[in-house]
Length: 459
Image 1 (cartoon, one colour):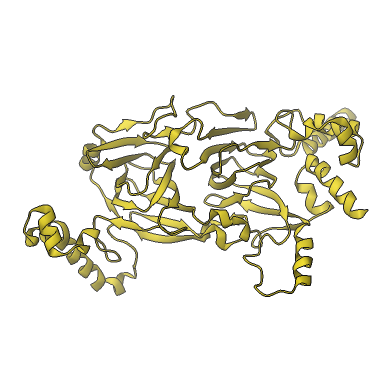
Image 2: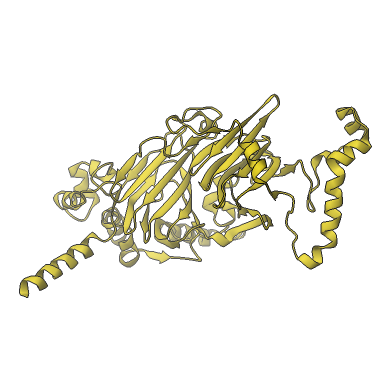
């Protein structure tokens, strides 16, 4: 009987807000036992020098078994100072590149052509695996921050970069060819090839290695380099700006805010580009969204039917709460357990768990399909999300005036599903006049207003 009561009570508790779950009927876990949050220190620095860095987030499936379907998705962050360039390279992975802040020039090379684009905040583009590209911070003052979702094509979860210009950790891939192949390919003596394409980098590598102990720097020196103003002006010629009106190009950048938000009110805005709207996202089956939540507001409880959403905190601070099952934080079960223990663990896993975490800039959190989630902003909060398995995904809200899936339940079923009457359930549903976003503390504010009115009237 008790189990039946908990099962019936859970949806009603969802109506009142996820935060009540921890104190009423479920246990609560926050950092560091929360498998759904990846703090900014979980990024590993791949390259770093005085001009910027490239960082790679740890593998998602290292945290929990629930992320097994994310083993072939990796998240990279690029940051560079003004007037710098990420030198040409290609990678064995498809990329979805999004500018978080700053102004850039992205040049994409093709066998018989090249295209340069002026990129700004929330400009987005797909770079197919093997594409040679280079990225310039063209701004005079602001740092450039770029986020990439990478989908490797050779080995799941492992990506390899191939550099045209060598450095102390990795030679130019041209130097991997034999003398005969290089001479035949370029129709030039090897000595000239070595001098023009290889020798300088080899000398620089030897010099840097001799200074390694003094400088205590083992990262890349020749991946992010300075540019002069004249070089930036040269690279800016013929660079095209992103269209703010269209998102349907098959190869050109699009901006996440080029269309009206799908949800919007005074408490927040939700922009989203889906594969149906943009052909670049179709073969990857990914949507990209940008969400801004005003200080003191929340994104109402909801879940995605099919999509697994990887969310990065671009700016601001807040809190998120996610409802799952207990022990989803375990990386893997013990290999040898008897049947009785396995059955016991299955029972435990059916218990509802509240996972919550503080959010700050640079943090990443993952929302598995079917898991209810809510996000509260303690300052203006800006989020960027990549949704895996985008096709036919349905976002179901559990509270709010519009798009509230629970309000669609017929009255006889409400009588059976909830401990309260259908009329009581409807009254709770109808109390919320906002949709998608709302004030995070309406009851407290109302009580405060009443107390202020009472004090004034008594005076």
